[in-house]
Image (cartoon, rainbow, N blue to C red):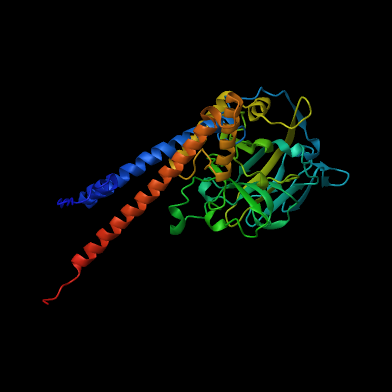
Length: 449
């Protein structure tokens, strides 16, 4: 009869050794190890995936929010300009037979003299307002690629530009507006308002830290029919899409200086641009350029309007000319290329690159916006599909260069690694909880018994 007299412990496996080794580590070392593992897994499975999607973003046309006007992946389109005569506002402004404006309806305290080269939208006196709105709307096809140029003058008897008010506005709305309290017209408009605000209302303590803009200030303000959305008390800084200061637009010495603003809009590319020529000598400076403009804020069939108002502080607003143009490709289709549109308007490549750089610097400085739109889940899905499509075309298989077996192994490996990551996070989270619990017990007062 064979008797085994050995009293040794049973042979331990690799898992037992690993568990013993982990238990011998201090809690700080365990937390450090967790951080290292999480970083490695992040680098392998997330960072590399993001790089692949960024490459896919370059392949997937139309998903990029960035726009380089000096670089175009599309051959420049041949574009023709079409002047929209039915929206002209210029001398002679009034039909002498009817004493009514040719293309616009008006209201308020406007003044105009026979054979005058301008319309006085508001005179230099307190509590005045005036407005003009086009009789006809712009068709959907004409508003798809649009340029509006306005010649105006803000002047008055006051020598100090910080003691004038209140300002003027250029409107693109789905209907003609009536008298109201937002630069002379109603506040529940549907569309886009471009406001030239000449007086800083938000100068109280609660707004000082947030409203440090120089005035006069121009901003773009969308609205979808909400009354009172534009807040005069803080100059609408909470609702503006963008804006810039336009110093020296006020003609304090009555020198006859006529300023200009130019609006360029391309619906297909969600592109909006606002340029300013303070002295009216052709020296255009970019104020606003948005490559992800919310196109629903610009009506499909907009009316064009102008308005102005004064309060206790005053200035006069004169309108000299408003001209509107639309653009078509040589084949009659709508414009699809921003670069071609800007070239046809006469925006030089130097101006285009400077405005893009200025927008980037402004957003980086404020830290409020990024030039890159946040990737939404649906957008990432589209980019991933595009990458798969490119791989399928290149390798003749929907599984790309890995093949179906390699793809299966890769997916399995990803699931395993993600599961391990979740386990490690849960385990070390439990350790952290135990450390916290033990510290609380140590701090607890103990009696003599």
